[in-house]
View 1 (tube, rainbow, N blue to C red):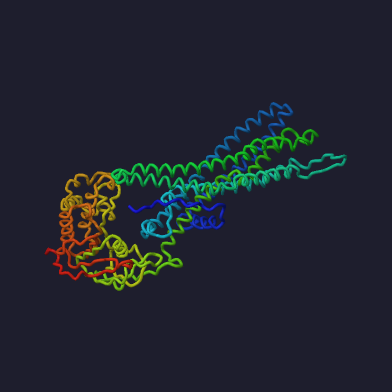
View 2: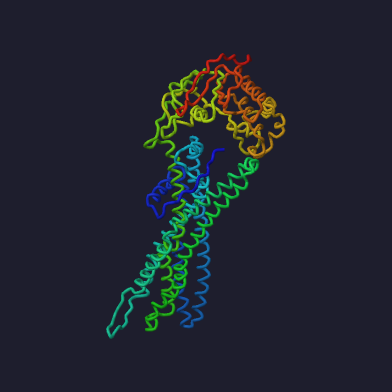
Length: 598
C-alpha cells in the first residue's frame, strides 16, 4: 500500500477572502442545476420561519410592556389576561422553533450531501484518488477533508446565513422600538440643560460596537490555531488507520514500539494544538462572560434617569431592556460566532485545497512535462512508438520505447526494481500521461491489471471476485469452477458469505482470486505485474499457463522483476536502467516457443 500520510503543514494564519470566495464558488452549485428546486424550497422555507420568529419576538417585547404596566398599576384582571396571552406566545414560539430546526438541519444535510458527492466524484473519477498519491502536490488525508471538513464547512455557513438574516431584521425592528419608546433624554449638566436624542439607540449601538471589536481582538489567532488543530486531528486519525491496515506487517516486523512512539508523538502535537486553542477560547471568554453579565443591566442603567423623572413606566423600562438585548444580539452576532467563523474558515480552506488539487491533476501547470499521444488500434494490438515516459516535472524514466504487441500475443517484460516497470504499466492503463511519443491501445474496454496486492472489496466473496463488474455478472458455479482451477477450491464454500477479504484472506488467496477474476472476464488486454509473487515457482508457472489457456484471444503482458521460463511467452523484453540514465526497453532476441496449443 502506498504511503498516503504526510506531515501536516503549518497552516497560514488569518482570514483569506480569496479562500472564502473560492469555497462559495464551489459550494453555491447546490442552488443550481438538479438540486436547485430542493435547495430553494428549504432556503425560502427557512427564511419564512425566521420572519415568523421575528414577529413572535416583537409580540413578546410588547407583552413585557403590557404585563409589567399591569403589575405597576396592580391591575389583577389585566395581568391575568396578559398571562393567558403569554401561553399563546409560547406555543407560537415553540412551533416556529420546530420549523426552523427542521428546515435548517435538512438544508444542512442536503447541502453537505451535494458537496460531498461533488468531491467524491472528483476524487474517484479519472483515477484521481490513485493519481494524487503520485502527484508532486500532495494533499494530506483527503478522506478527512471529504468527510469531516465538508461538514464543518457547510453547517456553520447555514448558521451564518441564519444569523445574518435574523440579525439584520432584529436590528432594524428593535432599533425602531428603542427610538420610539426610549425617546430623548433631557438632563441638566453644570447648570445647563442637555438633550440627547434617541439616547437608547446611541447607547445600544456604542455598546454593541465596542463588544464586537473586543472579541475578534481577544481571539485574533483563533483561525490559525483551529486550522492547526484540524490538521493534527487528521494526521493522528490517518496514522491510526494506517497502523490498523498494516497490522500484520507491523507485528511481524516487531515494529510496534516505533509505531507506538510515532502515535504518541503525533498525539502530543495534537494535544499541544488543542491547548493553544483552549488558551484562545479563554481569551475570548473574558469578553464574552463580561458581556453576558452587562447586557441585562446596561439598558436599565441607561433608562434609569427617565424612569426616576417619571417619563417612563415600569413596562416601558422592561420593553426597552428587552429591545436593547435584541439589538445587542444583532450587533454582536459576528462576535458571538467568531469561534465558528474561525472553524469554518479552517475547514473551508482544506476543502478548497482538495478541490483545487483534484482539478490540477487534469491540467498542466507551468513547468510540467508534456503529455504523450494516446491512440486507438482497431486491430487489438498495443504499439509503443518512440514512447518516452517521465514524471510530472520532466525527469525521464523510460526513454524511446518502441515495440508492437499483436492481439492475442503473450509478452514478458522483465526488469529490476526501479527500472520503471510500474510507470510503464500505469501508462498502458491510462493512469500516467506525462512524456512524449505515441502509445496505441486496442479500441474498446480498457486494459485490466492483476498485481501483487489485488483489490477485493467488502461484501460477499462472489461480488468481490466479480468486481468491477456488477453483482450477478458471473454464475456462482462458474466462479467456483474458476477458483478450483486456480488452486483455491476451499473458497467456493464462502462465495455467499460477507467479509473484509483484504484482511481475512492470505496474499496467495487474494492473488488466486484475482486470477479467477481474469479467466472469468477474459478482457482484451491483461497486464500481470508481479501478480503471483505470493505463490511458489511451480504455482506461478501453472497459473500463468492457466491464464494463457483460458484467455487465448487476450493480449497478455507479464511484467515482473525476473524472467520466467522462456517457453511460456511469444516474445520477451527487458527494461533496464543505463547507469544513471533512464531505462530502455530492449527485445531479448531469444527464441521463444509459442504458447501451448489450445
